Length: 132
Ligand code: T46
Image 1 (tube, rainbow, N blue to C red):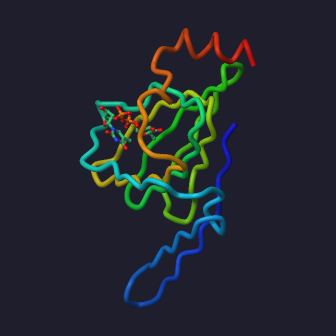
Image 2 (image 1 turned 90 degrees about the horizontal axis):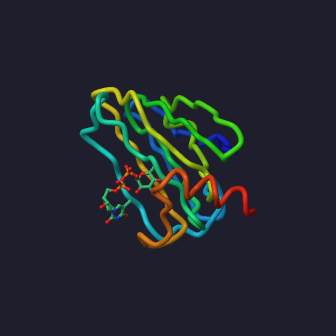
Image 3 (image 1 turned 180 degrees about the vertical axis):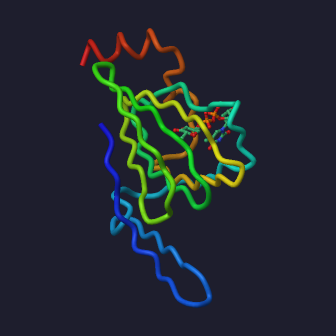
């Protein structure tokens, strides 16, 4: 349902450098990049799936918990290191919880923002997974 991608950090006394390259350590063409910041533990996010979009989510700072659901089973994943990216394919319902105060999420997406690609109703999502 999900895959954790190992990312090499170039670290030295000056700090860490994370390099992300399309079709190298990011397994799709990158059309969009966005960040989630100033997140709150008591305000979970997500609660949707995508029809086509692929994304790689990297926790640059802090930690948070993803609950992923393919309509048949659920998985829980903690993101707490910039050394690992969470690859989210389409047709996975995602919920994001327990953001630490310093949590910063960087997301690389395979396409431009398009609200029509979202399934935001869980019953519609379940019906779509049954059809497949
Ligand atoms: C996802 C998780 C991990 C835009 O206008 N452009 C954008 O590129 C994005 C991502 C969002 N928006 C708008 C859509 C909503 O009106 O920003 C508002 C907040 O988006 P949303 O409620 O979908 O945010 P999250 O944090 O629940 O979900 C986001 C992504 O939307 C989603 O694709 O997989 O992060």
